[in-house]
Image (tube, rainbow, N blue to C red; front, side, top):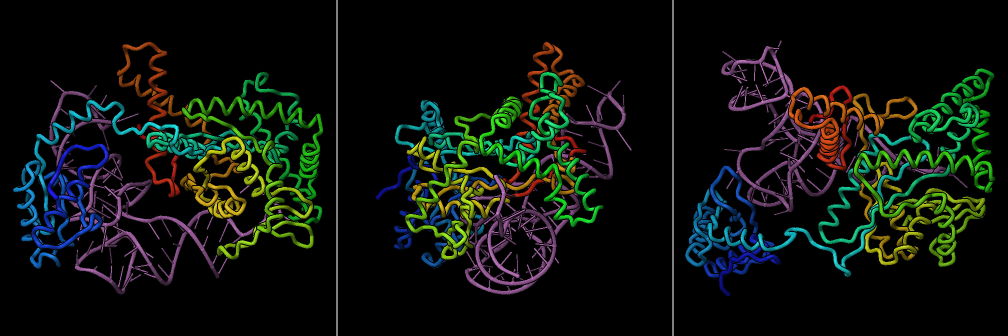
Length: 481
RNA sequence: GCGCUGUUAGCUCAGUUGGAUAGAGUGUUUGGCUACGAACCAAAAGGUCAGGGGUUCGAAUCCCUUACAGCGCGCCA
């Protein structure tokens, strides 16, 4: 065994130093240490040296004090390894200085490696699918979606830089009672208005009718309660709600007229989303729609039932018993045979597996309110034989709150994504004008630069916060440029 | 009630596998600048790392416990 210290793409300098320290310890104190016992870190800037060896763990072997032990090791390394130029010991910390020759040699070698630090994916690299964004089609994107999108997109870039093949995917929730509410309100009060006729961005237009529905629905509830109904009764029996439910039934039965409105309004929303995604600088490789996946899960659940992974109750509903995993029992199919949310996610997983059988890892970028859902989904997918089920990653992130608390769409306290971006671009533009830094540029160039600065500030504001934590956005204090 | 997550400077947040005097931005105070009370420059003050206990040579970091906050525990998605 001899001391080595040389630039090596496979083994970093800390590991090499660690091996050298092991040799030193063996020769000095005749004691064997393993790599995990050696702690080496970069020397803090207030001390001199490049790397610091923590000597406390060696005291039992050396039977000497920390300072003396540090000096012993430092001296041994300096004498036997020419790249170790010098050392000093402070308390139990041995600071090593590496020779300038080593650094120059290293930089030289790095200079000749194309794409140093990036791992290029190969045929055999793992295939990772990342799901993010996942909007509903009844309202425009808000600040919460911005956090989701920026996290998801960044994650995909990081995974790529680490040598994974990445598929970015988006599951659009395009069906259900919520979109029927917008459709109904548009039918009643819309007078045939379109994004073109009104000049309103499609997703905002549809969102406006969702808000309209809620407002009118609340009025109906109030009136019914004034007539003596309980709140619960009024909510269920309000004509708007029953009409929306009727519309959903028609949709599920394939009613041509309902489907026509549904397709048209969704297409408005998609055009609006596309614009917002573009401004945010995010994109997707493959988009799934719940209207196409929500029935797929039933088949898988039936399969699991046949295999004995799930069981059926007397009323015909299908359940998974997860008490063995420390969780509860979970409904998978209603008594009438229709799907629930969980069934739908199983269906989406099935379609993805059909499309990309070689997926090694699945990452879901979804808010922390769904932590339990994904815990359950992981177990269910595993039971159903998805190889990535057990290892699926729920990249859970916290909510974006306002100083007054949570954003609520019904109370109009959401921070709209388009508004926020536009406002930031404007601020950025005005500031550039005031400071006169871009006086030599054309108006178009200034706009262009302002957009980049605004987006950069927004990305930094969002991504600087630990994803797990809830974060606060204060609209009164504009985002710092 | 049960489960998961969080709590670090006035405010918004960093703090890598447990290591040296816990950091940054902002705000505050002081000084500088022939562009004003600057989205400028410099400096200072500001901490019981939520409280308590434990493990360790050493804890913001690991374990237990209490408090507070968020989320979940729907045949909603």
